[in-house]
Length: 461
Image (tube, rainbow, N blue to C red; front, side, top):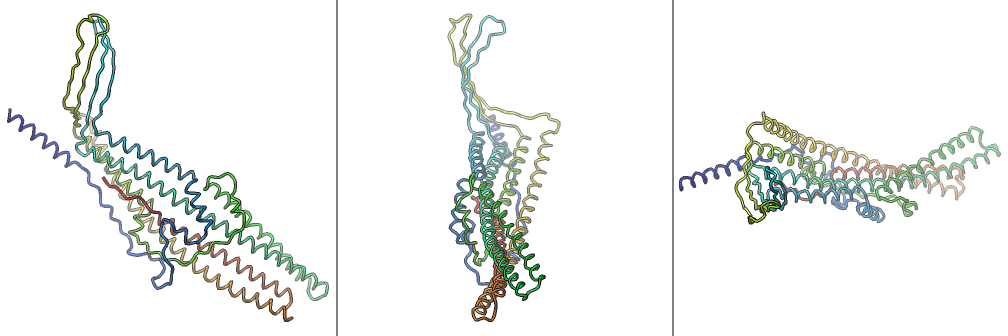
């Protein structure tokens, strides 16, 4: 008896050791990244503080933009869908976690005996507890954790895209309104030039070619002034969709100042990018899920062990009903041993192993693409910042020239046409400065979109 008990304990110990030995380790996700951003501003540049990933749009210092983003986060349908999918993923993870916990069920069943002389009505309880040996429980936990965290990552991704799109369309809207104001001013000054040229033509102080040239410039200015109207309508419609509203916001219809972006510095490193970019987090979760699926496939090569029991009470409905009813319990181990499947389970292991290797390569690819996108956005932002600074310098010169022309007209050293021409040059410089300011702001948004957002902590079972 003692020898048999020792044999059973030895077999149980071997089984537990085999169960632990079959756990699939997670692969090393080391990916080569540069030590620092190549296109980030130089450390010697005098820049302001770094806005964080949770509120980078506050750098524009625009109360309307802040309010729009808060409304969008509360009302956007895409974010709400992602949040509901996250809620469903949480429920499914809990369901998955109960797979290797004891299960108890109640059943009733009626059946006649084969001789058709009587029938029975059964009432009973069934209990079953599957043991997640050989890595099956760990693999199941990894798949469930990957699905849950993927849903959470999708929520962050939706929020990052939403905030970037709201900011970009708001910038486009205000920039188009600013362009429309300057183009309308150019049209008015061109009309004034045409009127002055007509007067000079009657006084034989100008030629017909001068009038034709001014009228052609006026026609071109009127054509240019039609472009911002379409851009304003498109930006408003895009914001309506993002805010999940059917009617345009009257606040946005009122012309507002174009948001100005101060200089900011970026202290993000590629290591931070791995933590904040949803695409890279998703690729990492794909590896976790693939490892879990491989663990389950490897566990299927081994027997399934569990504990089970029943308690059945059978009552004779017809026939000899005088015999007393008895409840019969039973309990014991559950063993499911695969014997012959023509290599199907090994094929599944090979397939899952290839899937895991592909997921690791996909992670490395996501890191490279993320770094490349961020580097490109930083390079574009640096270029647009330089263009915006040059445009502001040109605008300052145009302002000085316009003020000088106005002074000369007052003292009689210049006429109204000269002043009008200086005003046109000033409006064109202001127009170019506004476009450059808009491009720099959009590039800034692209940089932070490439960085991603604050993600929940990663859990690796």
